Image 1 (cartoon, rainbow, N blue to C red):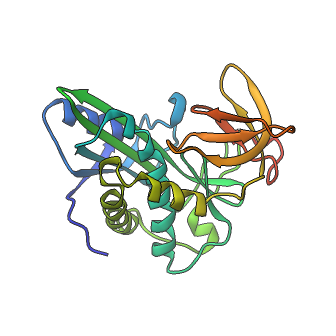
Image 2: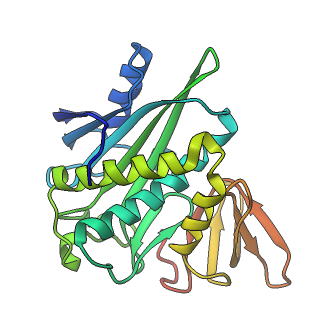
Length: 252
């Protein structure tokens, strides 16, 4: 799977996203992948720490986009699709239980195996994004307060460099499909194909409230739709989702 984006390989950094954003502020436009063997201050969504010892993939795609800022949130879903497809490609076969969870997690069964953190900078109407991706390849942390796993435990072994080579090619293909936001409907459809079925029980913690209901799909912008017991649908733009049908109270 060839790709055209250069890769900068670093030994140890605080966070590949921070390195990417610092380069962007210094004038780097990308596209460029930044991969580190280890992160000392890896970050997940909502400021959570991301355990980052050697053996797993820690990488960020830095690129400048010609899109409206409102299209940028859809990149988290796009990255999820790309990570899912890259895992399958690297494994050389379907991985049983591999699926996506809104907005930015990749699971095997009920356990998290990869996460995504997309951040952006706006300057003079130019959008620069840093799409950080962490994939548990050889090990997973045991103290997350939620289920986690790694690919080697499911017979899908790959080194960080091997995985990034595959991921870079898949991401390039999906970014072309996305076409600066014009192709988001195709990305949305692909995400839904790789996620759970409509009607799957879930709870959502938005930070200000906790709601229970069932997965009702995504709206046209990629926001989560949750149906309550009476069929009323709520649109969720931010929140932590727990899939209660596969792991009651797992806290994912």
